[in-house]
Structure formats: C-alpha cells, structure tokens
Image 1 (cartoon, each protein chain N blue to C red):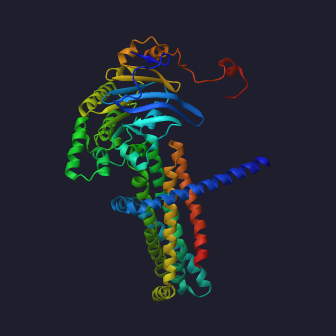
Image 2 (image 1 turned 30 degrees about the horizontal axis):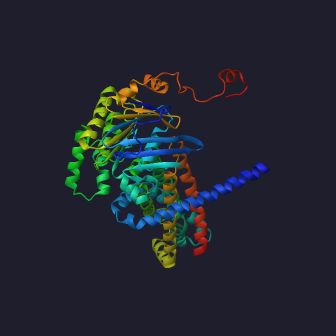
Image 3 (image 1 turned 135 degrees about the vertical axis):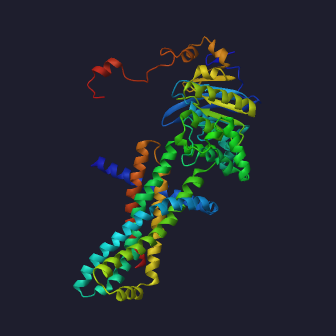
Length: 283
Length: 256
C-alpha cells in the first residue's frame, strides 16, 4: 500500500520495534533555507530502504542526520535505539563503528593503496595481528571482486572500481547499517549492475540494514524492500517499489516517469521570464 | 565615512574571531598531543614529508644566503680593517636571525602550502568526512601528526640552514677572499655564547609551531572547493610570513 502526504502514512510505522533507524518530526534548516519540515522515516532492520527525491530535497542531509554529522533543529533521530543528538562524542563514535557509509565519490584516502584503504578502519579500531588483517582485507576485496587490485592506488581505479573499494572498506568492520549515497552516479551499465547486486547480496549475506539514497528509480526498484520519496522537506510517498510504480499520486508519477511538468517544478524560483529578458538589468 | 568605519569594524571583528578560532584550534591540538605522541610512526612520516623533503631547498638557500653574507660582511668589515671578525658576525646573524627566519619563510612556502592544500583537498573530496563516519577523528589522525611533524622539522631545518650557511660564509670569506682561517673559526668560537644558540633554537621552535599551526588550520577550515583550497594555500604563505616577522621582533625584544 502506498502512503502519500495526502493520506496519513499507515505503513511503515515510524516507531516500530524492528526499526534500526527512526526519524520523527524532523525539522532542519541551514543558511536560512528550510530543508525538512516534519520528516518521518523508519528504516526497517534487515531491509534495503531507498530514499529518493528530486535534487535539493535533502537526501544527503538525511544521511548526515542519521550518522550524527548534523543535528535536527526539532524532532528525534533514533539509531539502534539511541537518540543521536543526546550522544557525547565517544558514544557517537561507538555508534558510527557499527555503520558503514559509501560516499558518492568513494572518498578513498588518496595517499593509501587499495589494501591499506580497506585495512584503515581495522588498523584504527582493532589490535588484530597483521596476518588476520591481511586475511580480512583480502576477503572483503574478494567480496567486491577486487582482490587483484589490492596494490593499486585510488587514482589508478575507474569510478566503478573506486566505488567497490569504498564498499569493501565500508564493510570492513562488519557494520549493522550500511549507508549508500548515490551509489550508481556516473557508473557504466556493467559497474552499475555489479554494484546493484552487491548491495542486495551484502545486505542479505551479512544480515545488515541498508539505506540507499539515489535518483535511479528503476535500478533501485529491483532490489529495494521499501522506498521513500522526499519532496518539499517531507516524505510525499512511501511503499514497496511495485506499489510506488502503480501509484496514481501526481508527484510519484512525475518522479518515476521523469516528467518535467508536474507538482515538482523543473525551474528554480525566478522572476518572470519575459520581464527578465526585456528588463534593463545586466544579469 | 560611515561605510568605511563599518568595514573597518567588521574586518577588526573578523580578525579577532580568526585569532580566537586559531587559538582554540591550537589548544585542541595541545590537548590531543599526549595521545598523539604514542603513534610516533605517523609523526615520523610527516617529519619526512615536511622536513626531509625540504632539505634540498633549505640547504641550497642556506648556502647562498651564507655566501652573500660572506661577501657583504667582508665588504663592510674591510672598511674598518676587521675582516677577521667575519666569522663572528656571520655566525651571530645566522644563529639569531637569518637561520630561523629564512627557514620559517621557506618552510611556509614549501611544506606549509603542501600541508594546507593536502588537508584542504581531503576536506573537498570527503576524505575527512569518511574518517568521521569510520569513527576516526581527523584532528587526531590527520591534523595532529602533520602539525607535530612540521613543528619538529623547523628547528631541525634551522640547524641545517645555519650549518650550511656558515659553510657558505667560510667558502667565500676564507677560500675566495682570503680571510685567515684560524682567525675566522677561533674568533667565532670565542664570541658565540650558549645564549646565542638558545635564541636561535627558541625562535626555530616558535616559528615551527606558528607556521605548522597556520598551515593545518587553514587547510582544515578551507572551503571544500578548488577556489577554497587555493585561497587556503595563499593565506598559509601570507599569514605565516607576516606572523614569523612579527614573532621575530617580539622574541628578539624579549631575549636581547
């Protein structure tokens, strides 16, 4: 069943026991711009949850709220039963050790080779013997198909390979929650397919919960258990991908169909076109 | 006039805020230092990057500064018939002023810019954010080793600069211009006191802390854009150079 902003969401419940992350009544603004106006999202344990929406709707900001990089002006962000805003630095870092995040650009450490990038969190947080670290790193790299690239440096990798190395690094500490920020952006069809399958396989094989922020509606629909569409600072629709595809909601139809005309304006707010072209101003 | 006054007030307020923020940044680094010293390997890597890789430029500059000092010093002292004092004069100039100041300026230009742009680019490419998400404090893992590596390197580079500079003075004064070798070295040994060496050492340490602090602060707080990183790099050189000269005056006034 699809929930839209016009019909109060009954599914999913924001305060379910099976929620690994729960954002309730979130209001957040920066530099005078209000990004969220009462956002409610629940991330179910063991599921792949897709967060979608037009550019500038705060999808990446949502991830920053979940990871405690920014804090909401109002509302609660509960991750693994703990209120992120109330955690001190030590507790926040302890929580983050149970998360892995794949950045849009990979964010690999450029002065370290692939092996050392994946070993980085292990070396920082554990006192494992070198042989064990080596085995864990090789296993993680094998999982993403890049065991043979262990000695390459990030600048020698293609975009897709870099994303997969970053994924190996994100799972190095066996996290409970894996967060993906635009994992498909700029990938060729083969790399995209590989990353897509990896997200699902890792989620199921490791028993983790995945949050995927993406624009790629059709790709993520193949693997997501639950999708949320954000617009205008709140969730405008949520449901299973198949349900969203069958939705009659204008905003869902526009987003999934990729139409320029619809509830979400294509143009950024601007003065009247005619007046601006014929006006005396230089810009 | 009102506009000018408001602008002056705003820039004055900005200056005070910057000084406050930099001081807080320094105190944060000082608080992290005891734990940071335990990971000495990271600091050694940075001593290599900031110090060892600066050796060529420091030695080359030291040699030519010493040689110029030899020529100018000889020309001046010859007018009073006291060219045998060339070694003493040059050694005092190198130990107390030229060594620490020129080394700090060269360090800011070579290693300071490198530190600022490296950290700034790490910020712009989300590497620092990635560390935060991996529960690794970038201040502890990235900034502190670079700060300590730079602060340790400058006094060492200063010593190298002075030694090579003295060789340059000797090369020109004794080998080329014919100053008596015995007088050159013995007068120098007789006149230089431990306090003169200490003064140079203190300046080297203070300039090292100042230049490294400015570099890591500007890099860490750079806007995450190409322009922001470029601006941080430029600010590193300008602020480090001006700060070095101001601190030099203050330290000289205190230690004279």
